[in-house]
Image 1: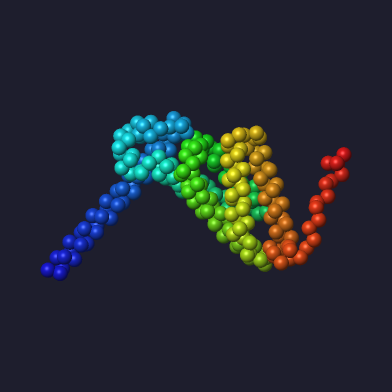
Image 2 (image 1 turned 90 degrees about the vertical axis):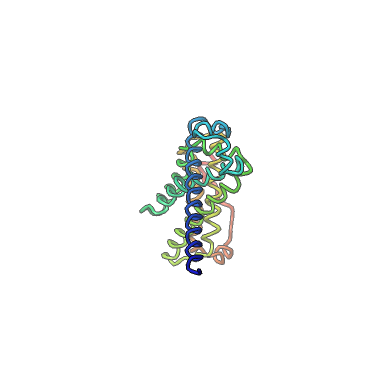
Length: 233
C-alpha cells in the first residue's frame, strides 16, 4: 500500500514538472513572438496587435502574463538574457587591455541597444515595468564588470574594495547616457562611445594611480585641474 502511494506521488510530481516546463516554454515562445511583433509594428504596439502578430488571442496572452507590464518585463529580460548580457560577457572576456578594453565594453553596450531601438523604446514607454526590467539587467552586467575589475586589480596588487561601487557607477552612467541619446540623438553613436570612454578611462587612470586605495586618495591634495593654455587662447 505504501509503495502504491509512493508511486502515485512520483507520477503526480512528474506531471506537475512537465506542466510547469510546458508553461515556461510557452511563455518564452510568446515573449519571442512579442519581440518580433515589436520589431515589425513598432514600440507603440498594443496587446491586440501583439496577439494578432503572434497568431493567438489576447486571452492566451493574459493566461501567461498578468498585464502589459508583466509582458514588458519579460520582453526586457528575454532581450537581456539572449542578446545584451551575452554580448557584454563576450566584451568583458575580450583579449584586450587598458583603453581598448574600456572602449570595447562601452561600444558593445551602446551598439547592442542602438541595434534594437523599438524593443528598447517599448520597455522605456512602460514605466511601471521599466524600473525592474532595466535594474535587473543592470545588476547582472555590473556584477560581471565587478568580477573582471576585481580580478585584474588583484593581479596588479591593487586594493579591490571599490570594485563593486565603481562597476555599478559605470554601468548606471553608461545606461543613463545611452537612454538620453536614444531619446534625443544629438551626436553619432561613435561620438557618444568616445565621450563615455573619455570619462571612464580617466576615472580608471585615477584609480590605478592610487592603487585603488581609498586611504591614499583621501590623503592626497585635490587641487582643481589647470586648463591647458591652448584652450584658454
